[in-house]
Amino acid sequence: MDEVLSVAQLGKSYGTTRAVDSISFRVHPREIVGLLGPNGAGKTTTINMLLGVLEPDSGSIEVDGISLSEGRSRSMSRTNFAATYAPLPGNLTVVENLRVFGLLYGVGDLSGTIDRLVEQFDLKAFCNTKCGALSSGEQARAALAKAMLNSPRLLLLDEPTASLDPAVAREIRIIIRSFAAAGTGGVLWTSHNMYEVTDVCDRVLFMSHGKILLEGNPRTLPAVHGKDSLEDLFVAVAREPLSLREGGA
Image (cartoon, rainbow, N blue to C red; front, side, top):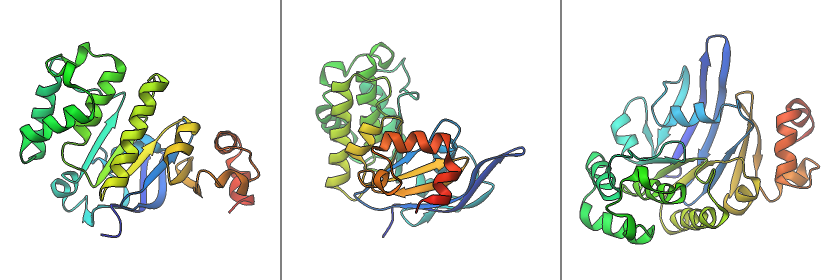
């Protein structure tokens, strides 16, 4: 397929508040797309609709060409997710978690897949440790190993390196870049770390008040709007979105 994710005119309201306002975008294979914006912009609501946790009021979502509304099980089997605020069940060990989620996803050669992921994410020393006893960096690596179990076509990452020390965060970025470069999957990544976004993402989408305000290459987009850095552009989106919409491309 030409896209791993296609979103068209997606909308969601809470009472009179329009949380996501008719947004459209795509994620292609081997691409990492940053979904950026201040708190309350609509990013997490968007992620939750992509995961099928929330039902949109309008619009459509396709994962690998499969409509989420018409083929939820098939589209979700091609998707996975990781976030630091959604750790694995703490009463299960690393291997127990990987086995349970692997069974849920119907992963073939599950034992071999788990062995490979344990090696890839440097989890061998923690295989039999309950996830609740792991450090934040170890939990992040375990969650990403879970997210790779089904070799997803669409990998959704919501603040995957939040609260991690710089060395662990760098390891996570390297792993995600390798995932995108080596296979046929694409990544949608939310972050408030503009250095990280500039380092990792091929393209960024800036959301404000439920709409996609700006889109482009994170390394060149700031200059288009007269800003010195992506962080400066982020601040401008948070403080003066109307002026950017009126004055920029």
